[in-house]
Image (tube, rainbow, N blue to C red; front, side):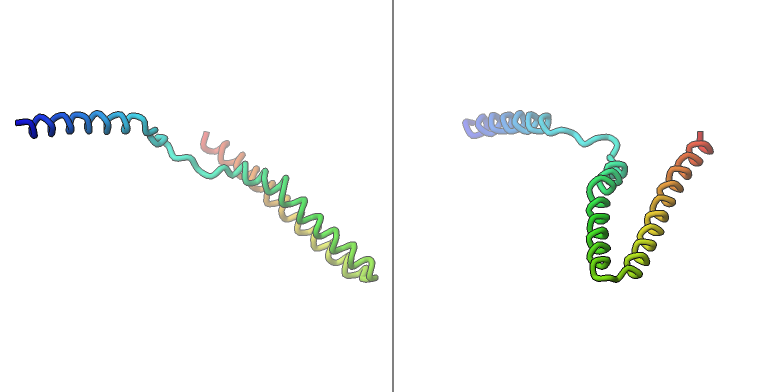
Length: 105
C-alpha cells in the first residue's frame, strides 16, 4: 500500500516536472528563416572587397617600382574589366528583382 502511494506521488511529481520543463522550452518559429543575403553582400562589400583592392594596389606598386609598367597596365586593365563585370552582375540582379516584382504583383 505504501509502495503504491509512493509511486503515485512520484509519478505526479514527475509529470508536474515534465510539464514545467516543456513549458519553459521555447518553440521553434513557424516559418524557418533563410540566409540573410543582404547582410552577406554588405559584409563582403564593406570588409572583403577593400582588403582585396588594397592587396592589388600593393602588387601593382611593387611591379611598377621594378619597371614592369606594361604588366601593371595589363593587370590594371584586367582588374577594371573584372570590376565592371561585378558591377554589371549586381545591376542585373536588381533589374531582375524589379522585373519579377513587376510581373508577379
